Image (cartoon, rainbow, N blue to C red; front, side):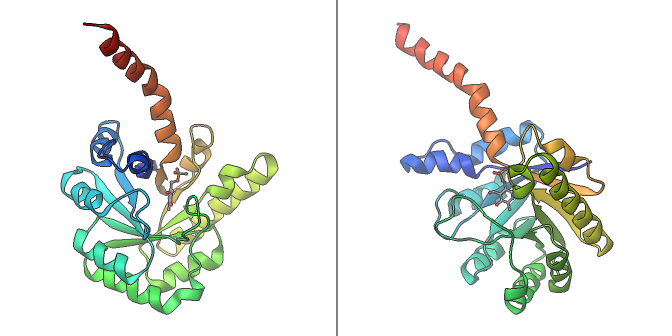
Length: 238
Ligand code: PXP
């Protein structure tokens, strides 16, 4: 049975829209754990557009489950990861202009640097995952570089429908089997929601699904009515 990693970047997005102190992703990590999250994922971006360094240090001290720190493979981020010592690090590609992580890592073009980076993190007892597209070539390079895990990018699967979505699902299933045969643990994520998650969750040996946007969107849908009611009550009662 796959476990659930909850990505709380969007909580920080709302806070950073006002550059204030609420909502605090650290508090929401606690609530996500109450709901059954098996791990908490945050992406500390070079541009610090949502999660801040302070959030990651506090999460490391306060969460009861596991901390999955997503970072780009840069010297700055590797140093921070070695200070924080999360349970695992997921290396992701990062572009300044992107709205979200758009594709998987291109492992081939960065082979030597990644080998050093992964070795470096593993020396600090941090397990390391590669966020990649479901392609045999990327899986083979993941093994060669020394990653412990891979996270298969499900963004394409989430965008497609009908027979095209079915084909992409088959690619994800085959990629999972290939990676398992090579001894890699397989996670998946991106674009998963309440409608499309079941087929990915039921893949044999799927370890963990990382889900953010749809869970935070659902939280707003479930919670807004109550929060308006509370405000209305404050205004109208005296
Ligand atoms: N996995 C990775 C590597 C990501 O970068 C993201 C998005 O931050 C997710 C999973 C979660 O994607 P979503 O917010 O679409 O659920």
